[in-house]
Length: 49
Image (cartoon, rainbow, N blue to C red; front, side, top):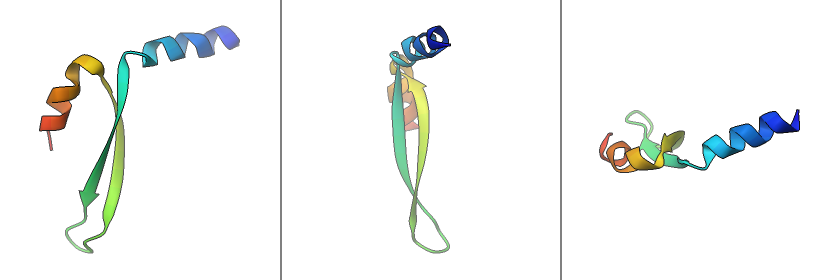
């Protein structure tokens, strides 16, 4: 069981958690959306809305 956990953590080394604040047009409150993106695609993900 521990081998599966280690294997998934190795894959996560090349990824970054991206957290975006999104404002609701109806209420004006902010919500946060989290996504995991590969390090080499980080700049492209930041350009997307």
